[in-house]
Length: 250
Image 1 (spheres, rainbow, N blue to C red):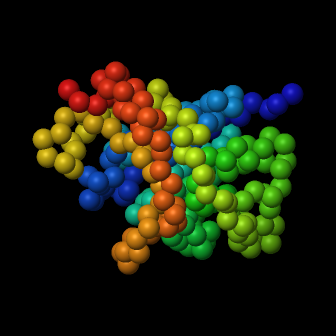
Image 2: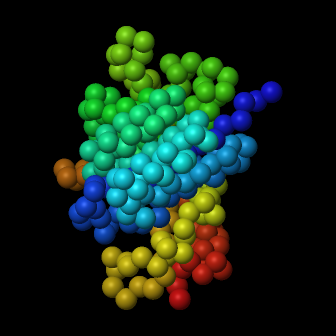
């Protein structure tokens, strides 16, 4: 019999003050897609959107005390700006529930992996795209699949050494992934957030492609130089989906 799993997915704040957070308060597409994949595979998912709610640390502690007893795995998706917040958050999670498995993903793992291994309480670091990795990590937790067999991750071994597995191959077809699990998020709140573009009403972010062919010195190409684009008709279907739910345009 398959052991039931419950995932708590967390969208962390950039910092306690959320300085310059305007550009980051957009719908967390990666987290939403992973939530949809987990649900498709029979896993219960709860989303804790700290960034959207702009919660203070004591409020976060209170919510974690309520949520963690019911969840086995915690997944955090972050950018490098979140580093000090993730350090604090992961320690809080382990203090409240030492047995929780903490997965950390997002571009932060591509940019400062050795630092994360030394300063956070996270157990496994997911590097690059996570759609297939998350399912193999579920197999690790449920069935004992060895972490060494999972591509695109890093973890500490029994000697507390950082082990990095071979890189995972990029997805060739982005349209093979499901739409984000919008029902788990406060999508209306995201749709109503001010846009960085003047005179824009309700709006949501969607993924048209991944990867960047350019070499800007100030930017981290988290998905590599190869560009993978979605099919135009799938983009139109997703826009129609959001418009019909009154999440785009007034």
